[in-house]
Image 1 (cartoon, rainbow, N blue to C red):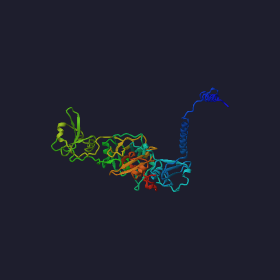
Image 2 (image 1 turned 180 degrees about the vertical axis):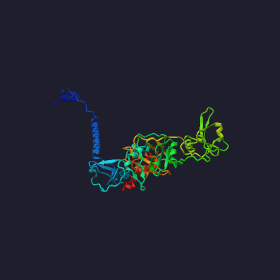
Image 3 (image 1 turned 180 degrees about the horizontal axis):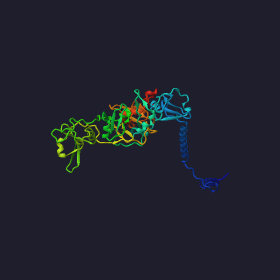
Image 4 (image 1 turned 90 degrees about the horizontal axis):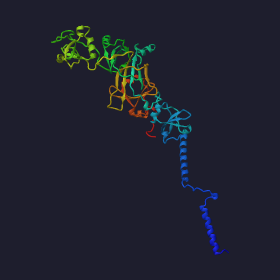
Length: 461
């Protein structure tokens, strides 16, 4: 049996071995690095990220659909090319994109696989508006630049073999070349022309107005330096311009006779000059011995009206002081709405231009209409920039408003309400305002409205 001393030595030996084991490292002299306490945490986070990404990828490939999609959505089926509107849990084939948007109020298109529609009720008869546009540009591609509408000899010549006659056997003038584009828009220009309508009535067109010329058309043309044969124009084109006071020769009673109390004759032209001899104004002597001021346009009309008498045509010179008491600023001899200057005669084409304005700006400027230069190319009928379109508010002369979409094919589609405009994917800020007469230059398609689609989507999915 071990003695007490031997037991104490054995205990010391065991303690020394334990201490050596804890401090001397691995066998062979290798040191073991202590385990990192965060290693498990890092691994766990990495696995969680991989799991989340995998879930997203799986969702994208399987086409996870939003909640409530079956109540009001536009659906395209992958691999089949079929398309539906989903309304209240039922799938309806639709005729065109306009109808789909009006029915659902959604511009988003859901692409799904056939398996995702398995078991869902379907109708076989297409819904929608026959003839409505199947392509709608995004708002940024809507055209808000100026429009032009032109008549020309080239268009008439091109259609010479395609003349159309009305019920009375009269040839129908060719459609004007109406152009809506964001580029190549001609600028405004002081241009004038004489045209005739289908009934043979002649008009001077200049600025934003048309002026009927009841008589002496040729003489009036010579006075205005317009010498070519007047073009026959479509009535809708003529109505793009406002109607002014008819352009008639000025009638003078007792023309050529002495004016009472004056050493001048009735109808005589007068020029005033300042002290330096510069001309300050043109006038004509009236039957009541007054002087009526003439602008450049009125001067030519008066000159034509008084005939070829050189004693009337040659102006008499008066000083500003002499003429002052004789000037009649209240005279109505020259209509206020007549032009004030002689515009350049149109060449090969006569064009009217309108600059649309934002419809949302109620107090903003109104659309500006004017006779203008011609674009580089003219073709009969309406031409709209491919891929574009125009969303308009056509304002009638009485102040009425009519929303419409003009497609890239040049068709005018009335839109029932502003709510329908929004269901098509646009806002009030996307609408431009034009005079209602311009809408009549385009063939008219069916009205676009939610009720006309044959289905009504719920207010919210």
